[in-house]
Amino acid sequence: MKAIRASLNTSRRNVLMGGSAAALVGLLGAPRGLRAAEGSEYVLSTASTGGTFYPVGVAIATLTQVRLAPETGIRLNAINSAGSGENVYLLKRNEAQFAIMQSVFGHFARTGSGALSELEPQRDIRAISMLWNNVEHPVIRNDFVDTGTIDDLAALKGHPVSFGRPNSGTIGSNTVMLNNLGYDLDSDFDLTSLSYNATVDAFMNGQIDGAIIGGGVPVGAVTRLMASAGSEISLLSYTEDQIAKANADLGIWSPYVILAGTYPGQSQDHMTMATPNLLTCRSDVPDEHVYRIVKTMYENLPFLQAIHGATKEMALENAIQGSPLPIHPGAVSFYREAGVDVPQSLLAD
Image 1 (tube, rainbow, N blue to C red):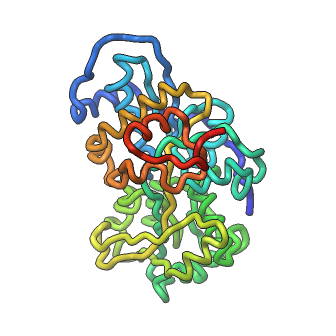
Image 2 (cartoon, one colour):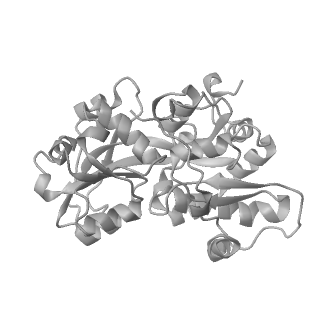
């Protein structure tokens, strides 16, 4: 399995500017105070604009700009990126101080393993909160469907597919999952490196025959694909045995059912698998700042849930579920106030 390397193509990242934040203020109401104060601005790294990380990251950033910045100066600015893999490097280099990532990449980062095996173990990344489950969506052309399960990828050997951009969480998790299922991505498939939106375009233009798209349900790119080409493609399922085999000894993924009607033309439930996505940060972010940010998030869940349905999974009882990283002390303080028990194993040294 190829290890992910950092990409420094920062010119391609879009910073959330004041105008974008202003467009969302109506959902939140006016700021609670107008007092300017000393504080800090931070970068929140997300992923490509066609997935779930980016719109949720924009929503979290907007919350801080409307609720926190006027009184405290604490502000997040959301940028897009290649995804989880690149976000680890951005945190390491302090080009971002906050990031959204799949929990599997938190594990890879902390242990220097898997898709991040060329990176030394990162001991200074902290979890803040579980956000939603990253759900796998394998999609192939109907011509290649036999069982209707992930086993049908075998028919795509030698064919053009999209399994994620370099340095993305998508390609990293797909590499681990497919290796465990007996595939070699480099030799078995004609890989194309595409964003989610570009993947949809490639399907519609007949340039690829399969893809695996991960994200919070519903994924915008999958909705667009099913609406545009649903009669030509199928969403594949996983059996329990396939999920167990994909996990190997990692225990990363859990069964997840995409309910019928979630996507255009989807007439039946699809069993797939999912892993939690986490909001993370550098360990040197002040405790008070993290405390205020996570408190603001949980006090404004209806706003986040209005931006993207995936955040309906956010709840205090799920806040530290599936975290492979220590919880930042600022978040621990909030959770204890809210009655959430943080086990000793998740406390930072």
